[in-house]
Image (cartoon, rainbow, N blue to C red; front, side):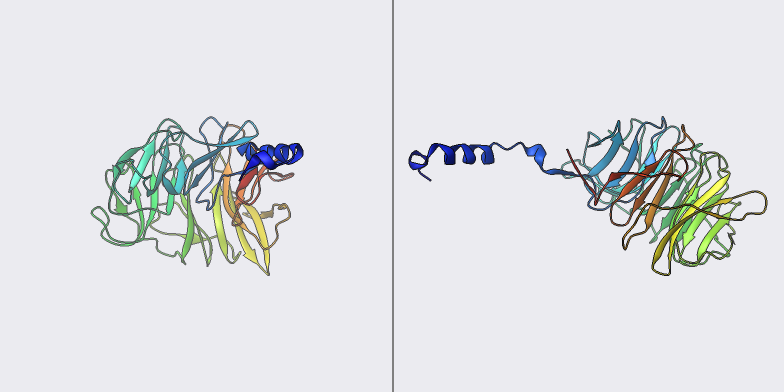
Length: 301
């Protein structure tokens, strides 16, 4: 284009278009979200994505520095983060990554095993650090069969859980924050609880199709979500006493449902939910009021 023949106003418009700040475009936080967890200090909300680990802190979203791995799961303890997935290009890690661990908030990761063999889309960890639970999809060098397996030594050794009484297929596992022997499962057939390292499960009521599950920070309540009669729902169930669940009023969701639930370990009244349409909401009063912090996986900077 010969800009010498353009009028002054046209040149100004062209300059504004070319020099427009890149920040005008929305920051894509999550094309697909494969988890939701608070950091150990309660200051960050984390989402594992196909392009790295997204973090919400101080009212802003950003990406954690370091390799932008394709994370397919995330579990947080008081000392570390655990994940699995596929390595970033140029990282030098085997694909798939097997089980990996970070002790610096996700900036660097250490291999714990099964790298080059498998990835775990279903992963849970006791916040006390006492147990890891995974849903294994195919045999590997440490797991001879599919199904739920657990480790009590940071993934060095794995034991297959019998999971008697568990109806499936399962969508998520949640480990009790204090009792490493207790684990819950969300499945097509309902919500299930085990107190013996997933050897046996008991169905809690008959809520129907359950999508997500999480323990509160004290391990006194089980929160779980589902879908019924073309409507999303969220409930919490006390683990002691009469065990009658109570409904949590959700923010408006259009053809959407809760896919992940996370509790702040430092501020017990703070809870976050993620949805299948990549929306994220945070409540400071156990679901009494919700603030939307992510819409459709993107946020305008």
